[in-house]
Each structure stands twice: as structure tokens, then as C-alpha cells.
Image (cartoon, rainbow, N blue to C red; front, side, top):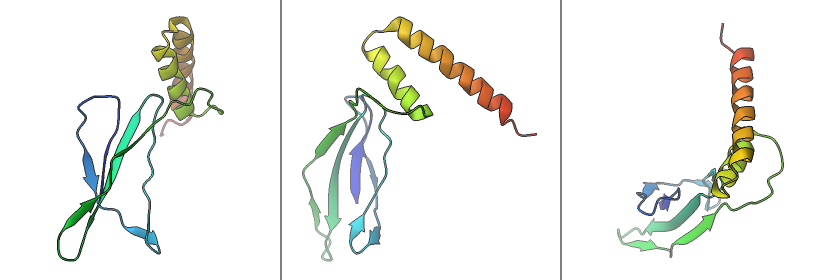
Length: 112
């Protein structure tokens, strides 16, 4: 079992869920962290006698400055970074481009 807190809120609620082994005692869980988001986690193991043992909390934060690629995720991260650095003109241009691409995708892939 593990718990984590995402986002930049100072009082975010922890989420807890069971992890199941993928192979030979290896447990995995994928996360998407946008620019500026923080992930704090710890693991709790329940022994056969019912006692619980937890690891210390660990934290990671997405502060990647130079993201490669042009995916939706990377575009959103770049917009968040521009907002954090108060780059209003750059952010406005990025938002306009993002909206145009979203409209194009909706138009091209609209279910008929």
C-alpha cells in the first residue's frame, strides 16, 4: 500500500491504494506530473500479524526547464512554466496555439 499527495496545494489530501506485484516483488505505479507539481509518497507494508510498517516520506517535483517534444503534456507544462515566470505575452501566444490545435483535432477527429 502506498499514499501520495499531488499538486501544489499545501493541504492536499493523501490518496491511498494497494499496489500489486508486477514481477518478483516489483511494484509499479505511473504518475504524470505537470510543471511545478509535487509528489510526496511513502509505502506502508502490512505484515502477516497485522502490524503496519511505513517508510519515510519522499518528495519529487517536476521543475524541468527545457522540455523536448511537442505533445499536449509538454505544451501544458510550458504554459505553466510561462505562467510561473509571469511571461504573459509568451503565455498568451502559447494558449492561442493550444486552442487552435485543440479545435483542429476536434474538427478532424469528430465522431460521425
